Length: 218
Image (tube, rainbow, N blue to C red; front, side):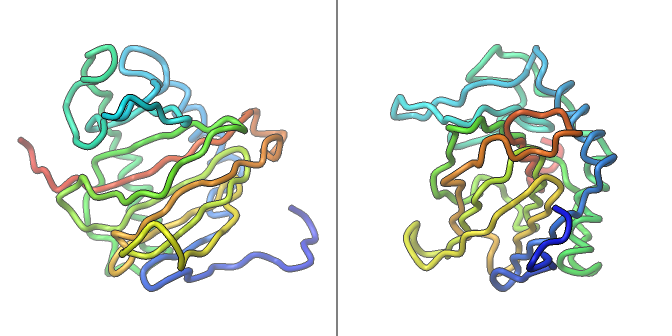
């Protein structure tokens, strides 16, 4: 957004949790969106996630490297078409390490990222408060936003309730959380439909979340 009254800058939301606005430029956003569209195509493409209690997540998802389903990982889309999960590309891992270095410092950017969870939100989609706790690694989580602006609610490690901080994540924004904040509850209570950059060509919001599994080769 041009000529903002209060220009956005790098902000530490909590110890180990950092928001970096406009981290991806317009060309980088377009390239990442093109890749997401390829990954979303079947087999092992974009799917509706069903919870053990019989509910469904309103954000749809595709995975790379390992397939996440509530609340575990697999090598195939066990809750979908059964196809092998798409591979995690090396360039995406490099992007993850660079994101951590920029947000938290080079000493924190040593882990090899090997999992991506890509969530697509339309204007009515939400994500309840949850923790990313199904990995064996405690390496920082990297979150990249494309498309519509959302309210990202970043909480504490003890409860889904307050205290929490609401942050507007726009297209191109980076959010990294690790260290003391790695197991913090977080969610998306609102998406602002129609706020994506017109030149991007995306209706809705994509969130590309990079993680380190810690599972090894087995």
